[in-house]
Picture 1 (cartoon, helix red, strand yellow):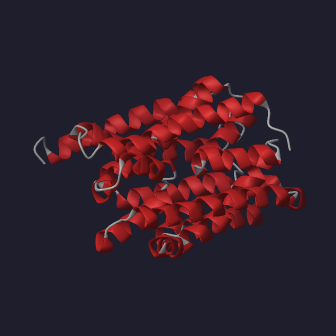
Picture 2: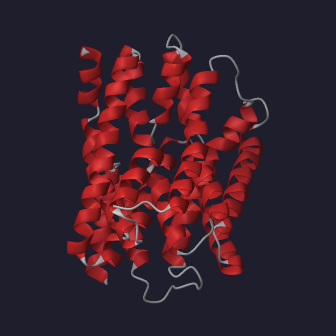
Length: 230
Length: 105
C-alpha cells in the first residue's frame, strides 16, 4: 500500500500536465461532435493523448475507420520502445501484472518510471499508483474540457493545442534521441514528405507514407555515418 | 449521454492496436530481443510521425491546399518549438503556442 501511494505522489507532475492537455483534448473532442459518454470512453479505453487528437481530427475530416485505425497504430507504435525499455526493471513481476501495467503506459509515465527505476528499481504497487493516478486525471480533464467547450466559444484557437502539442513532443523526442543530427534530418524529410503527400492525395495515408520514408532514411543515414559495427 | 455503435467499434479497434505495442514488449521482451536495425528504425518513428503531423496541420490547414502567406499558425508553432526547447515543458509550450495563435489571429 505504501508503494502504491509513493507512485501516486511521483505522478503529480504528470497529473498537472494532463489536466492542461486533457482540457484541450476535451474541448477539441466536443467541438468535433463527440458526446460526453463518447469522450469518457475514448479517454479511458484508448488513453493516448496524441492518438485521441489524431482520431478526432481524422473523424472530423470524414476519414473511414480503415484509415484511422492504422494511423493510430503508427502513432502509438513508439510505445514498443518505451515498453521494451521498462521490461528489464520489471523482470520479477508476473506476466499478467506486467500486461496490466503496459496497458496504461504513456510517454509521460514512462519518463517518471524510468527516472525512478534508475535509483530505486520498480515495484508493481508503485507502478500501479503512478498509472491509476495519471489515468484518472486524464479522463477527468477530458470530460471537464468537454464541459468548458460551450463556454470557450473560440474552439479554433483552442484547437491549435493540437499542432502545438505535436511540435512540443517533437522537440522533446529530438532532445533524447541518441543520433540528434540524423533525427533532425528525419524530421525535416518527414515534414516535407508529409506536406507533399497530403497535397497529392489529401488523406491520412500521407502521414503513414512520410513516416515509413523518414524512419528508413534515418536508418540509412545512421548506418552511413556510424558504420555497421557501432 | 449516447455512444454511437460505430464509434464504440472504432475506439475498441484503436485500443487494441494501441495495447499491442504497449503490452507485448513488457511481457515478452525479457526472453526475446528485437534485432538492432528494427530498434533503430523504430526509434525514428515517433519523430517522423510528429514532424509530418505538425507540418500538415500548420501548412495545409484545410487538408487541401498549402497556406503560407498570412498563416498565423507558422509563427505560433515556432513559438511552441522555442518554448519546448528552452523549458522542456509540454504544458508551457502548448500554452504559449495557443496564446501566440490567439494574439496573432
